[in-house]
Amino acid sequence: MAEVRAARDADVAAICDICERAYPATYTGLVSSDYLDRMLAEFYQPDRVAKAIAPAPPDWLGYQVVEEQSQVVEEQSQVIEEQSQVIEEQSRVVGVAAGGITSPGSGELFMLYLEPGERGRGLGTLLLDRVTEQLRELGATEMWVAALEGNKLGLPFYEARGFVRQSRRKAYGTTDAEDYWSLLLRRPI
Ligand SMILES: CC(C)(COP(=O)(O)OP(=O)(O)OC[C@H]1O[C@@H](n2cnc3c(N)ncnc32)[C@H](O)[C@@H]1OP(=O)(O)O)[C@@H](O)C(=O)NCCC(=O)NCCS
Image (tube, rainbow, N blue to C red):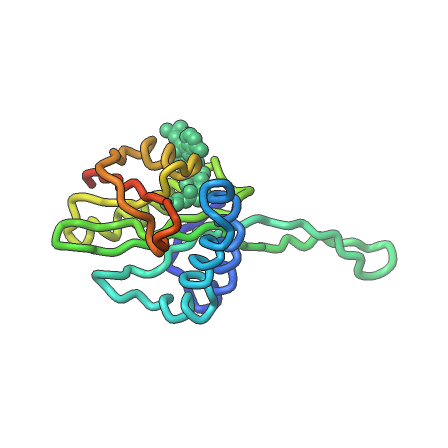
């Protein structure tokens, strides 16, 4: 079972960990490892993530995480010849997203990443729905997202969920020597 909720202080390590793993899984071959390291260092260091756990609406609505619950049955040998089963609830944060209002009536999905092994099971849609709902509640009627050109994991997902390509711009944080581009996509919400 998966549940989406607002991130808490205790989720900082999981958020950094997911992004550290999802970045190379998503962007290797599209951008240099130097660029990836710079972006990870800028956005997904524990100190920075910790400072951003608290929402600052409307610009920043806080990280939303998807947590998976599973039941683990453990055989416990208590006394000789007597065994009991203990059912333990385990939960694990496996994805994160965040958005905010960028101008009146308009919102943006700033980031969305899953543990690489958790893709393709609807969890990205759960996170996207959650951020969409947050933006709607604040009056947004359109939603934007920027995705790196060539991102074969992100772009088909956004297009399957109704986003349409509008324009392109130099990717965030690129130097003059780096020719990386982001596509800007929009959908009405
Ligand atoms: C993008 C991401 C969050 C999507 O989450 P997900 O849980 O894998 O996606 P879902 O299972 O909810 O899929 C939703 C729809 O997108 C489609 N889709 C998702 N990934 C796809 C892909 N790589 N190619 C084609 N279609 C894809 C699915 O077919 C599904 O459509 P349907 O329900 O109409 O059949 C996830 O794949 C991910 O972490 N990717 C790497 C990071 C990334 O690119 N983030 C975006 C940065 S801008």
